[in-house]
Length: 232
Ligand SMILES: Cc1cc2nc3c(=O)[nH]c(=O)nc-3n(C[C@H](O)[C@H](O)[C@H](O)COP(=O)(O)O)c2cc1C
Image (cartoon, rainbow, N blue to C red):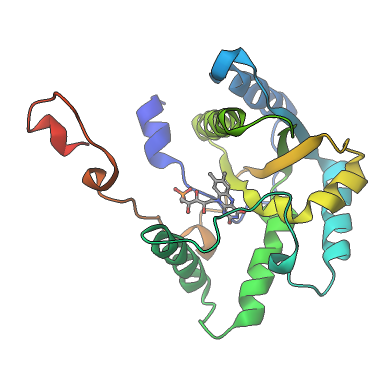
């Protein structure tokens, strides 16, 4: 598979088949993603990869600790979005939520349905592999962006291998529970989870494709001919 095809095909997967992933392949993807570029080659990512009993134990602990609470009310270790979020970003965020809930048949007034779907984040959407990506909290914005590069590289490698992924910032809302459960040092800050496995392509949660802004909204080509400046 060419990189452009992996980029085109990748989408966030929120329902997985109950089918294990070859552990050698998981290791290969996780390790190979470490070839991602990072400023100063700091490679600031700290990666925990869970499957089998350790994964089940983490999910159980987190879901039990959340209990009847709405996980969206928990305090993350960082703010996932600026508050308040402004346009056009607020609309983009709303749109993906609406697409997901519509695909799942969860109505606008169905608060419990939305909460249950959000809770599913903490089961890695049923994926057989759960990855947690963290960094030393002394790092700053440049190193956070390096983590993005690591996560993107991992997701494309997974796509190439025929696997599906979903990056999950939601895990910051469970940071304290995860820290206790895995015994993470206070210095280690959880950025996100990544669900990894064989995607259930027939599940409604995976039945939509998100939109992208027009290139002209966010990209300027300087010094290019007019036809090039229209973007991809
Ligand atoms: C760093 C990061 C964190 C994300 N966190 C979540 C999350 O917690 N839960 C979720 O369902 N999707 C999450 N997503 C998926 C985004 O909603 C998704 O990437 C976006 O809507 C674009 O859709 P696509 O990935 O299908 O192209 C996250 C994506 C990224 C890159």
